[in-house]
Image 1 (cartoon, rainbow, N blue to C red):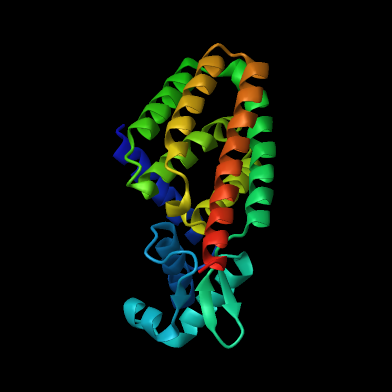
Image 2: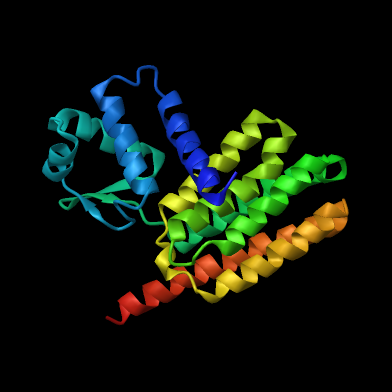
Length: 242
């Protein structure tokens, strides 16, 4: 399996998970919802962008009714927001939300790691090694691909637990992180640091050192949180002074 295969499979898994939330994937309202969420996922529409009923309806070749349903549902889920007298916008997370999402992510990933590292099969270790290699090779200019590879890598240990509730929760957290943050604001230096941290974590996972892996993964997630929150802070400061 190549890195492109991995990204494609992750994308279809994401789309299928959206469709499975609804009883009828043929309903126009559901189709509008699925398409808009896909647009956010592939960055066709980005955090902070205004969504105009007519433009969306024209692009999807639908009436306003299913579009309004889709936007209302996405608002409830926190992916879009409605501002008084201004309309709908793709939601953009703030520093407090980012911090809370990373804290929840840390809790699930650390629990999953502690449950699985000691009993990892050779095939699991080889797959993790491949994922780390693909992520390291991904061009920082292709942020969508890079983020999907990172998400897939970090989901791996939780998937190995076989706990469907944890898997769904962690996938949901990644959706919120990756769909509501403008990653063009992330410091490019995080690329090198992240790859180094992945390599060090893999070494202790391969040695089945649960305690060492726990400490390194915790620090890795907290470093990511710090970089993301800093990016948000820098953006807000720039705009305040504009």
